[in-house]
Image (spheres, rainbow, N blue to C red):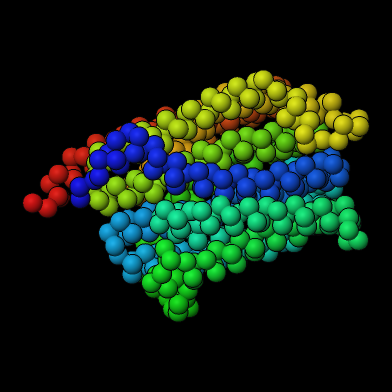
Amino acid sequence: MAQSPGIQSWGGHFRATMTLGLPLIGSHLAQVAIQLTDTLMLGWYGVEALAAVVLGASLFMVLFFVGSGFAWAVMPMVAGAAAEGDTRELRRATRMGMWLSVCYGLGAMVPMLWSDPLLVAAGQEPVLADMAQDYLRIAGWGMIPALLVMVLKSYLSALEAARMVLWSTVAAAVLNALVNYALIFGNWGAPELGIRGAAIGAIVSQVAPFLILAVYVTHARVTRGHHIFARLWRADWEAFGRVFRLGWPIGLTTLAEAGLFAASAVMMGWIGTRPLAAHGIAIELTSVSFMVHMGLSQVATVRAGRALARRDIAGLRRAAAMAAGCSAGFALVTVALFLAVPEFLMGLFLEAGDPETPEIVAIGVGLLAVAALFQLADGGQVVALGLLRGVRDTRVPMWLASFSYWIVGLPVAWALGIALGLGGVGVWLGLVVGLALAAVTLSLRFLRNLGRIADRLPAEEPA
């Protein structure tokens, strides 16, 4: 299919990337704002409560990221179907993505309801493990709506209709802050529930955007005629299988990365409560920058999927280059920020009068210095993954990422941080190694795929 000159130009690609990317980036930042609110308020409430929720939220997010693989699979499938004008295929992929998300969410409840022995077996302090379980036994009920939100976000993003994705997440962040302020501290006449209040806030922040997006999908002009929720109870095993086959490697890839960071939290817990608290704050700060790269990765998935469906190899190349370039540019800005004002950034999350604050800040400054090292690598690997998903290549990238994170990154983190006694800085240096290796291998994989696609497409184009 012929492309318009505007879209073929670099300026056209930049505008297209930003038009889709800014709402997605904004929605991811709003999602991080929810986590930041929890970290800020629990840091004010108490270091022990903060450390416990770091553990509990780490387990929740590991399980969530695995399940979100099915939502990620929906994105390139819907993008390709939309480019081809195939409404039926678009609907089938979205519905079965929702089916798989519900099935997975029910299974994920089990380890959250009985997380105490898992965390103790992982070497965590019994008191922190028990508090983390209290959090998860409430927050865990938000897993299914959170996964359904991911499916609807992927569906709308693939249609390049991401504005409501942004506003639904902003609404969730505001509601979460209000509920946390009331229930963590007992303000406005509410009971003081501490970490249980934070868990209730988490559920509110997951149910609210699902309801908003469900109403929007039902009535919006851009989704008119799709009928996503009509006869949702009907099984479509063929589409179910296709979403599953594309999605499970994505979920395991995400597990490999999320598990690397969760394992780093476990190792920080071995070092001590204050290092674990500093790690939690530093992770939140790096999460802000990572969400920008994540938004660009999703743009890469959508634009690569659409270009592939149109058999537009030039558009695919330029879409990939633009997403990677934007990611690298933002990474450099983040490096400068982390190196310039680390004490200020860490201090935002802690009570100034707390006697433990100076030590936590000092530890966190070192962690942010290392985090500056992996900004380019972290952005590079997630954008490469997005491009590979856009061309529906998920299995080999799963193995490449798993090798980079777990066979290389995690052992290096343990060796430097624990065995050699470098502490938190050593653990984070291991993260740098794993992410850098993933960025290189995944980028090479995409370039190899690009060459194969270029060789194949001319013969497939109609006369």
